[in-house]
Length: 152
Picture 1 (cartoon, helix red, strand yellow):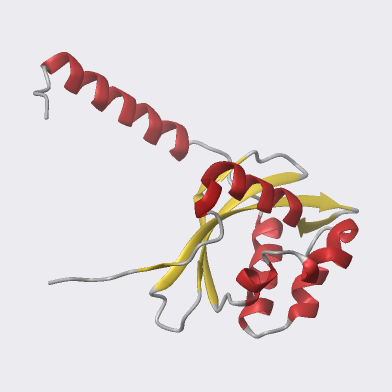
Picture 2 (cartoon, rainbow, N blue to C red; picture 1 turned 90 degrees about the horizontal axis):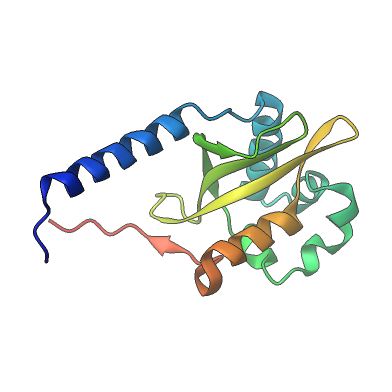
């Protein structure tokens, strides 16, 4: 490990401050987009595939249950939306960070950025873009489940 000089420390601190400032000042997704996403994920948690599919952009609905990632989505048991990391928010788009859980203890989880689109005045999940973004960002680690392990 290399020792840090004071200039390096100041640069790191300034960078972290700017990052926190930028994320703290970002525009949040509209409440309607959050409600649409929450409703869709609640549908998955109750094994209501029909309502989840209805929450997807209409042009994509017919293919949802044939997607390679469909079993991953079907396994979701709970979720937590984190609007601190919303991005690309406009009047008709938003990308919302969400933690999804696969067990009742919320120990098995994954983090997804859901791409939301407003179509005909109603918010929907753009599942094709959500999947594309996850794969582009995480490659082979996209759509993997992780487990919290607490060690004393």
